[in-house]
Length: 192
Image (tube, rainbow, N blue to C red; front, side, top):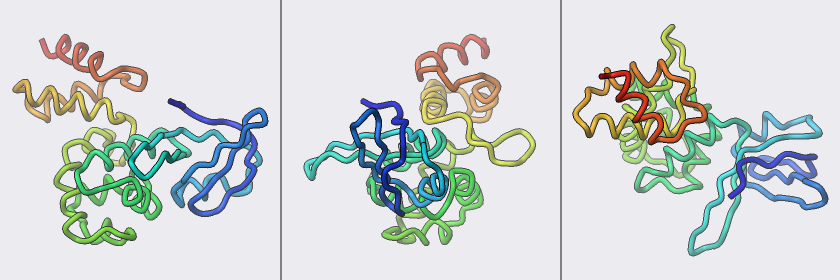
């Protein structure tokens, strides 16, 4: 519904941020990392995710698209709800999560409030192939593929391509503004 909300910071504390946009104040639930990035600033742009459930409607705000994309990946896992995903992103950045997943460090993930060891292991199992897209060629983690790239990788794997080949092709593409379908179409052209 909202891609991002940008305006004057009216209120900001760990877990909550309020941004005034032309006289309308939007209250958002934020991670500790987003709160820390906003600290001391007068204005901010937060990328948003609107969660609609039987308990109500809640707007989540993220300082970077990377954090938003990882949030979406986390909440796509059965058993990881919005609060749990936010708890994980409050104790680690997307790059730190990628490192924990790639090194099978379930203890680092389980440090998040409400995340047990079994849930942390499930997160590693479900995200291992998806987060591997965000690793740059020089060995440092660089989250730049996004959730669409991860979904495209899954689709290409289902079509019979190896994850290594598909990942190599997708990581060579500028996928930041592409839909999942566009990424798959372009990757298939490059593979053939």
